[in-house]
Amino acid sequence: MTTPILRVSGLTKRFGGLTAVSDVSFDVHEGEIFAIIGPNGAGKTTTLNLVSGLLTPTGGSVTLDGADVTRLPTYERCHRGLGRAFQVVQPFPEMTVAENVLVGAQFGSRGVSGAEARRRAEAALERSGLAPLADAPVEDLNLLQEKRLEIARALATRPRVLLLDEVMAGLRPAEARAAVELVRSVRDEGVTIVFIEHVMPVVRDLADRVLVMDHGAELAHGSYAEVTADPRVVEAYLGAEEEA
Amino acid sequence: MDLSLLPQALVSGVLASGLYALVSVGLALAIGVIGIVNFAHGEFFMVGAFLAYQLFVSFGFDPLLSLLIVAPALAVIGGVIYLSTIRFVLKAPELNQMLLTFGVGIILQNLALVIWGGDPRSIANVPYRSIGYQLGGVSVGMVPLGSFVISVALVAALYWTLARTPLGRAMRAVAQNRVGAGLVGLEVNRVYLVAFALSALLAGMGGVMIAVIQSPTPTVGLAFTLKAFAIVVLAGLGNVRGIVGASLLVAVAESIVATMVPGGDALRNAVFFAIIFLVLIWRSRKVA
Image 1 (cartoon, one colour):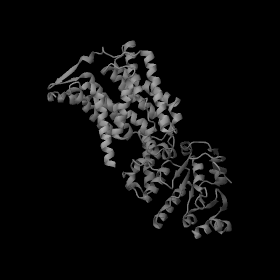
Image 2 (spheres, rainbow over the protein chains, first blue to last red):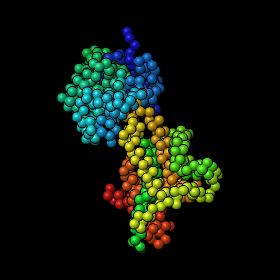
Image 3 (cartoon, chains in turn green, orange):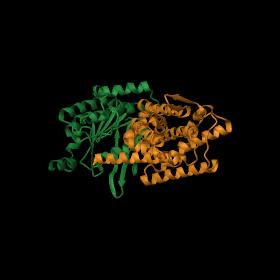
Image 4 (cartoon, helix red, strand yellow):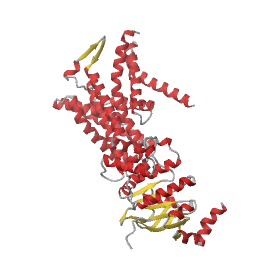
């Protein structure tokens, strides 16, 4: 088996007395679509924050393409091919759509020329369906468009691994289907995807493998069919959801 | 009040506004991009003035030539101060940051007092200092005109840099969302360093010009720090055009009072801050 492009090993994060992420390990292979699911407060977003460098872990390690990136700052991880799109979108609010994406294209890798950055930004706008809105101010975008911008800006950094945090949340079914298609087409270009999602049909349609988290720890790990058949998952996650 | 003095007052005010705008955009850069309230900003201005003075006295350098030397010198001084002090308080409470920058300012000011003493110093012997033009009863000195043109050019260059260049986009991105900026590959700490160095550079170039316009002492900085703060507050952050407008407003008002009101010259600073107070009170009423 080849080296995984992303290896998370024994990852632990404590905030004072609270353990938000506890000894989580998983491997993601190049070209895979890997889902992290679990009830609210399970530690999914904290895990992604540890992988992308917004938080420093208390223990464990993150390895990107064989290199330990556990202590590297976010920009350095970005340069090494880790892209991130947020559940709560993080645009540059006073720029246009095109400028937002251009920042990603220009600074996402080292030594990108102005012309090359523009080319990359245009390509990212095109494939995320935002080209007609290139000159629009960010404040004019609706939720779907904001999420697309978030993905476009991450794509413009030319990631090898793209981390998506609930990018489908709040979307209507037709919009979510379009987003699923976008994610799949990004993968088909060779980008590895790690995503957090609550919408189970999306997970079923997209994920090659699924990690189920509960209370900060791994609950189950496997294909969608495997984890949804696991009685612990049904009880802790799906069961809890039905009650709610 | 002698209304015939009005055109002269207007012209003098407009010419003075360039320098205010130059010093203020530098301060706005530090506050807007780095989020640091820099009370030492006017001291960069002062250091620029005295470096130009020293270059003139020691080597006979024309202030125009000194601009080209003082600019990189102040960028380096700004960079060193950022790396040795500012970067350690980025996450500290604002009051701590202000105290630190205030202390840095006092150190710079006292260093200048040790080196140059407390007497006013001026670059008086440049040939163009005595040149002036008469246009329909309004006299325009070469020095105020030149400093206005240079200031406007520098402010315009900064505006263009912010709007059009990768460096400008990086600074705006960091100012608008530093988390997002880091995630798309921007080394935020380096952008801070560059912004602070650029801020000091702009102030220093203003200082070179004040050394020709006035006869500054090492305490000239504080007045410009306060005025720049007032202008930035008036204009709002991240708003080069607003800063230019606010500079025009206060500089012209200051000039009108100083020229046309008997004994008005002593009221310059009072007028300046009276306008700021009035606008702030008026603005807070609109909000309320």
